Structures are given as structure tokens and as C-alpha cells.
Image (cartoon, rainbow, N blue to C red; front, top):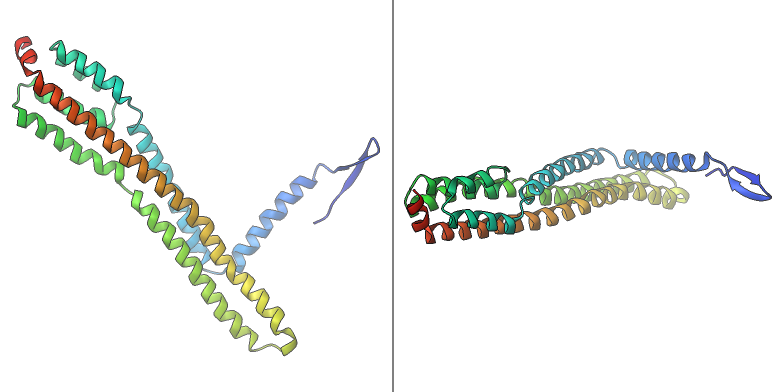
Length: 241
């Protein structure tokens, strides 16, 4: 690396373009390592792009699903059920579109239409069966991508090692150690890049898997609580009807 120094009040000061040069040199090093890794680096790069796309998509879906405050929602719904005002309860859950509110809304609408207890439960279960898989969708793919990136990296390293030993057989004895060390160093780039992709992807899988499970548990809790509250207070709804 080249250092350019200027003097300011008798002290050496780094030139303004030194940092830019360092950043450019780092990018060049990454590009050289990528090129040295050979063709396996491209599928690993594809894994990183695919994994990032899934992570962003899952974040958008799960964060939207978890944006509803279940405690406040239950409090408002139960208050209107006690008043026998199902129309107002339906209006409350219709203000936001999320798996939780969709399931609760299905039960409230069924109750408002004077359907039986089993029909109310069936209506809520039907929406739950549709909404829950949407939260878990594609999360397991992140784990597969992490494993794939690691294995491709190892494959690239093995291929590189085979090539390294094959190359050593064609050079003089004095150059064998140097050539072997250089080729092995380049081959290890695949393993390093594969792990760089795999580790964040696996962390994303752990986070989204736990997050989606928590949201689904909340949905089941609110759904069961709302269903039991509706069935317990059907007499108030009947009197209002």
C-alpha cells in the first residue's frame, strides 16, 4: 500500500485520498480472491443473492403479521362482544390486514350471521389453515441455502486442491513448495466465501424461524381466546339480535 503524507503544523497528516485508496485496494483484493476461487464462486454468489432476497421478503411479511398488538385487540373485541355489538368488533379487526385479524374477523362474521358454534370454529380454522403456512413459507429455504453455500465452498476447495497437486507435478523441485502454497491459498478462497455467505444466512434462518413461530403462537392464542369468548357470551349477542 502507498502512503502519502503531508505536513500540518509540524505533524504528519494522511493525504485526503489515502482512505479512498485503501477502500479501493480492499475491493480489488476481494475481486482477486473471487476470481482466484474459480467457477464455484459464482453459485455461492447466487446463494447469497437468493438468500438475501428471501430474508428481505420474510422480514416484510412477518413484521407486518406481528405489528398487531394482541392485548389491545383482545381488550377492544371483548368489550364490544360484551356490549353485543359485533358490527363494531368486526370494524375494529377490519382496520388492519394481518393473519391474526383475518382469523378473528372470520369468527366474528360467522357469529354475526348467527351460525352455530361449530360453524364459527370452522370459519376461523379455515382462515388459520390458510394464513399460518404463509408465515412459515420459504423460511426453511434459508437453512438449505446456508448448507448449499458451505458445500459448494468445500467442493471448490477440493477441486482447487486437486488442481494444485496436479500443477506441482509439472514444476521443478525448487518451486514445488511455493507453487503448492499459492494454489492451496487460492483454493481456500472458496471455503472462506462459502462460510461468509452461509453464516449470515443461517443466522437469518434462526431469527425468522423463531419469529414466525412466535407470531403463529400468538395467532392461536388470540383465536382460541376470541372463540371461547364468543361462545361464552352468545346470549348477549342473541339478545341484541
